[in-house]
Length: 262
Image 1 (cartoon, rainbow, N blue to C red):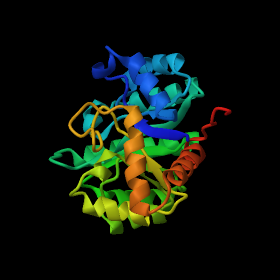
Image 2: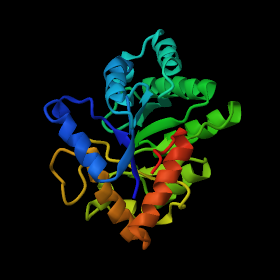
Image 3: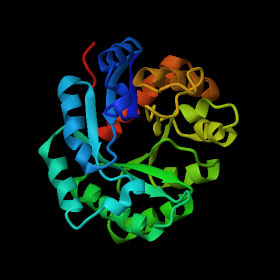
């Protein structure tokens, strides 16, 4: 069985002491590919070094909405240059909107729109972070589609309602479920995972955050994506192997990944 963790942050300090052991565990769990997300372009060198060390790792480059105040006139050119510098860059992100306690909504919108333009220019998907901003996100994407062209991508670590899920499916997006889907009270996310088409569903860890049950409260790591896969397979009443095959194929299609020969 082959699994792909479509959103990880293994460059964080909490992995420094035992990263090789973490790598051994993800390989033992059947994780054959990882997509390493990027919080800000300054991370690029450290993420690139990890990809040099672990050939199964591809990565993104972008600026997180909670860091929107770091955007300058040079940031767009920097992301563009970095994305073109390494063929292992498979996405722009993570970018998006986070309006939870946010006081800079307009700034976030401008920074997100700039990164949509980069993704369109580079013909790369976007990894979208969307918290408490689904309505505004839908409007922004619809407007961008009308004025430019569709951009492919994924709603990562999805926590929206089934209605909101349908909005982004209708826009052609993939929906990625993290360990949150395994939480007992995440009933709306359970319903979203049930209705997501088999050719548009992804799984992720968003490690080191949001470890799934039965590891909830611990440091999350790529091997734990298997727990999320098992839970989602049960929700959808399909065998784990079926869910693994579907999500792996979907990740390959979205991020243009090639699987290792078996």
